[in-house]
Length: 346
Image (cartoon, rainbow, N blue to C red):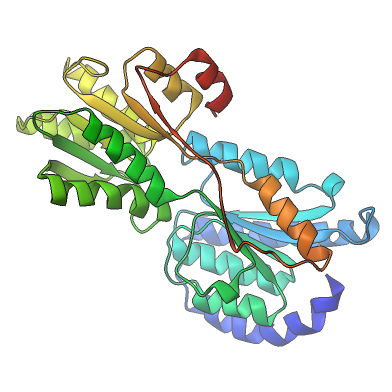
């Protein structure tokens, strides 16, 4: 908003220098330039169409690729439905699965003079400098979906899932299956992300404490095709396995495609246990059909939480809870119901 114009101008030179040192692809650069153009256009619109309470609140939203997964698609749709002119916002969006490209986008939003920077970080590390720049420019930061390794003074609130708990819930369920041996294909998400760290950490701990075997542990970067290739490679090697622990539903789907191609049975009472995360509706339907065994919930609907935080800050209130954790659960193929699919499927 206009009250920060002087602060933003003073910080522009420093931010521009930092941006020069951050690598990014041509696609990301184009995306950032498009975002800047959209932001400039929406700034004019904001002056012409003020919200009921005054000027539109200008927000820059940095997220992962909405095509990454069904979870991310639902997350992006939720944000776009909330942060509209009708709801008092002037919103611009930037997307990347790479931390350096997200940081470049954040620097651009700061230069554009947003009031709030909403961030779902690709990686937990590397954010201190740009968030300090945001604070110096009077830009308030709200984290969503993923945590970062930065001092809490650099952001207003963090609205997240408990990724560690998600992993622990899944691993505890797997322990309860009482297998005579555990030979696991572990398909990891994008390395360094909060989701990957939480879901991997719980399994790594169980492998160390319970003597489970990791047949392979590789990142498929949330991608079904890469997951299928990894599982196919294990099948081709002739090594036996009886658990697929995939850190999202799309990778579980890719793993199952490889199993089906090799005529390896999977699901309840079958040769291979299949585990996923995110609770896409189609994935929960696989549980209901007992083709998969377990799916861990990850709630993508954070926009209303963010909106509530912004309204409190705009009213001059203090956010009492810095970290806001959303309730989540895990689903078992032997107990899931159609109502669960309808209510929790995304």
